[in-house]
Image (cartoon, rainbow, N blue to C red; front, side, top):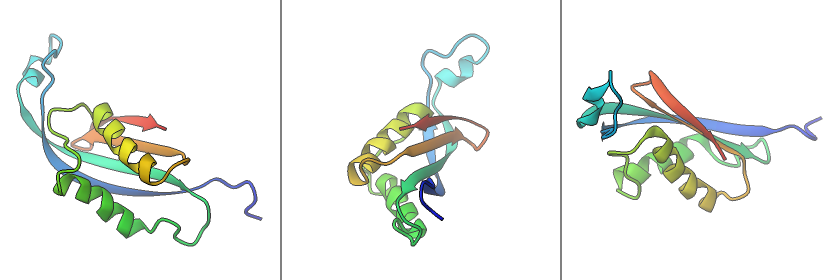
Length: 115
């Protein structure tokens, strides 16, 4: 029954950070100055069986810890850059899986990257 079914899990978390877009275009010049955001992350990763191959809570804690412990930094990066940094870590630890990462500013505007 499960043959050929694509399975994945997802987790969400958020982190406070400082953002700056030095080359901000006309109309949003204020973005060229450092400003605060709450960055919201949603990470979906492929799993190969349906019995907590990657446990939700542990995976979420692992990803949050990357920022708390300083392994990854989010300040002064675009949402796309943050997703790429996070993907590098995840795909190194959990190789050969499909991965989708969404990063948004204040859960309002953001980017989606598929790996």
